[in-house]
Amino acid sequence: MLRTWRTPALILTAVSLVFSPSVLPQIQPNGQPCDGDCLGRLPACQNAWQPYVSAVFLGRATEVRKEDVPITLDGEKKLTEKLLVTFVVKESFVGVPEKVVTVSSGGDMCAFPFSKGHEYLVYAQRLSNGGLYVSACYGTNFVEYAADDLKYLRGLPNAPHGSTVFGTALRFAEPERLDTKTRRVVPESGHTVTVKGLTQNHESIVDEKGNFTLQGLPPGHYTVSLDSNGEISTFPAVRSTTVDIADKGCARFNFTVDPFAQSAGEKCIFDFERGEISNCIRQATTGELFIAPLVLKELDFDSYGLAPVLSLKEGWMYVSRSGIVVVQGVRTMETGPDSFHDGLIRVVRNREYGFANRTGQMVIPPIYDGAMNFENGTARVCKGCETECVEPECEHHVFVHGEWFQIDTKGNVVARIQPDN
Image 1 (tube, helix red, strand yellow):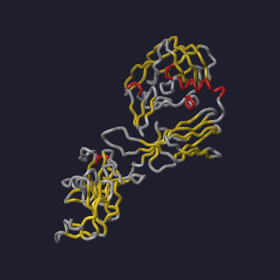
Image 2: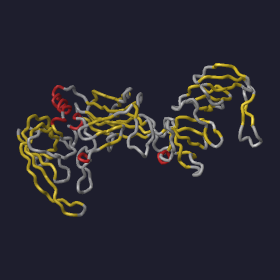
Image 3: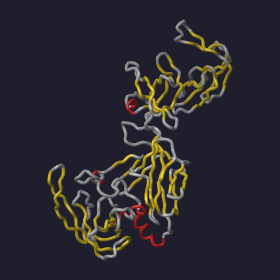
Image 4: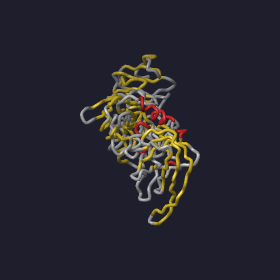
């Protein structure tokens, strides 16, 4: 399941950021990020109560004056633009009793691009001199992109008391790759999100779509955590998962779990001329084996998207382009791995033979003591048979004795055969 979030300022696909040049997080001349939330637009129920927001209103910009103010950039004195914007206030939501206000923005490389004649939902900070200041990262937006924010703000007078914590919990379903910035994610369903307060803890279970919600919490100080195996992070990244939530306010957390992070690797061989490769085959916290990204880009994949890799512990295996090991326990033939025949390959589990397809599904369970490859839709298998060396060096062997059968690609026995057949 591939999840995609979209806002007017940013696009998040499979937990990978794609920024347009105009909305990259802005940086002040001193190298510090602009005040506010620059990486992702917060929901109004969270943004309206941020410590840097003390005034929220809907207004029309009737005048925009520009001033050049000096700054020091890379050690050089330069000029940057500061905007002084006059607004006619159409609706006041937080801290704006005036009908007409002047807002300053910029002079610090953090200006919001106001223009005359447009309407905006403005999130501002009331300064000590009584004026209003807007950073590009406060959440101010054009009115046409602010429908959700306005719905929340207009509903505040009649909204029920209490605070809300909500968000998503997703797990990476494939390891990191060097040839792409996107990774497939799946819901982390069934795991617990804990919201720890000063006197009481609250819990929510992640649903089948990867969402969680806790409503009706007393306003106050909370720490939010996800119970899961793997490296847990948030997107957009937050400095802390400890928050203060106002009455009728909220806090959103989008958790991602990476079971493939920080995993030690075993040696492998995929090219005998290059020899052993260290830190090659790794194990996720989910138990899946996968190939290190630096090794994955070197593999030679077939037309079905599979590549063979030799584990010095597990033997031959086939790997998908995502890096996940899909088929394990593949037999050695001559100096390489066994190959697929009629879409199936022999695999060995606990010394018994079965057949898997190219996705790793065990189509025929491992119940045989010996098996030959499929040919024209059937394969010979045996129970009670043994292996016998063909030559003194025992580089080759055959199956002897036991009961022999002929099976089709679904595992159905179609005939009993003699061992010498």
